[in-house]
Image (cartoon, rainbow, N blue to C red; front, side):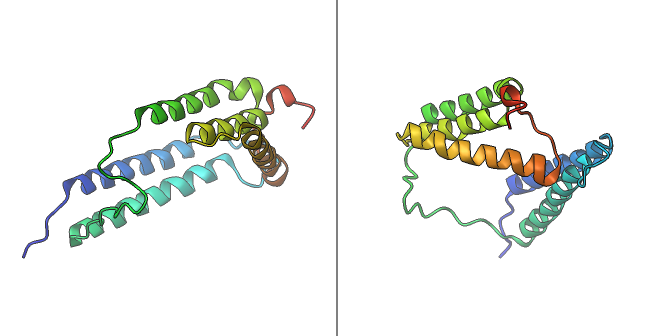
Length: 162
């Protein structure tokens, strides 16, 4: 019996390969960054782009063998329900607000708002706790990048305080 070929998986593999190659090529054009940086700006792009190309090849090989993903059994998911467009729009709004406010407010504030907003849109009603958890995570990641890796990310209105 000939295995059923899922052409959508080949399309996904092609998209992954194109994005991976584009990421690697685009990373090659990045500047050297700061002289004291341990990790150069292009390193992240090289790693992610290469990983995407490897995943594209693995997906194409698996598809050629006839491997197909098994459908979700839906233990806690009702597969008969449609898309919750309100939740999806709320998450998209939180993401757009994050992008728009990042340079002005900085990562420490916007990261906290991102976590709290996403958690609230997904159904958590503990706003204060969401903000506190988001603040701890965003300030911690800000210091991790800035101090630990030497990669400056926007401090925004907290510039000079953090």
